[in-house]
Length: 274
Image 1 (cartoon, rainbow, N blue to C red):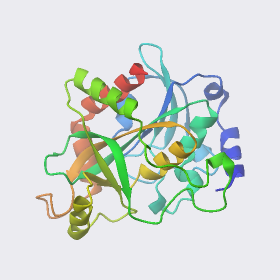
Image 2: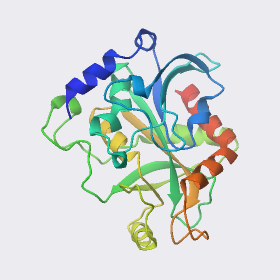
Image 3: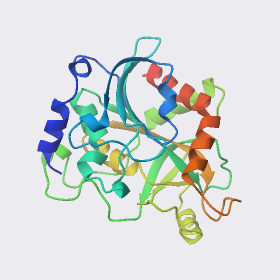
Image 4: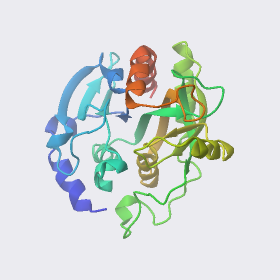
């Protein structure tokens, strides 16, 4: 990755962000954007106005960076949407939220996504804290010439997801009337949904969920020393498990809209728990 691309991106961030003291940063994936609708917006900028980031192109991603404040006065960064590797974006764009958060003084990341459920006990509408992931491709944001700015050459991956933050998420969920389980997330490069055979293989290998995001950002954040928490919203059951014969992006958004209240409670409660 080219550090100069991050430099020019950060230079475009409004001063209001740079003068703030956000307690964490959130990457709000498909269906999660409305989770911050009731928070006070102190500043915002479109991704398309940030060099080397680019506007979001996927349904359910509004493509805005917000500085928000909860009712208790805690400030946070909310990246409403993300760039995916399958969009043809460079790695700088994919991990841009993490790098900008770091430069704005944030050390804790909450990464969210919509995922397909593999574990038989899951149902659409469930939320699952990610405790580990499977990356069965050679796709990695850490590929290329090594720069110490991006962490060690061979970063440890034994604890990408912070156990203390996972427990906070479970506590917040329970206080809001929801039981949050944890699980293993399988990263698929996309943009096609997985085949039933692939889902059976992921399940045999221990995956509870599958999706096309989160892992690159989590890997990068962990590599540079940030604390990472991640939550999947189960928007549908994966291929071969779902009773539906076809899967679609519309199904993801429809299910998220039906569960927006519980998703918002978890996100806002997490920020206030820090």
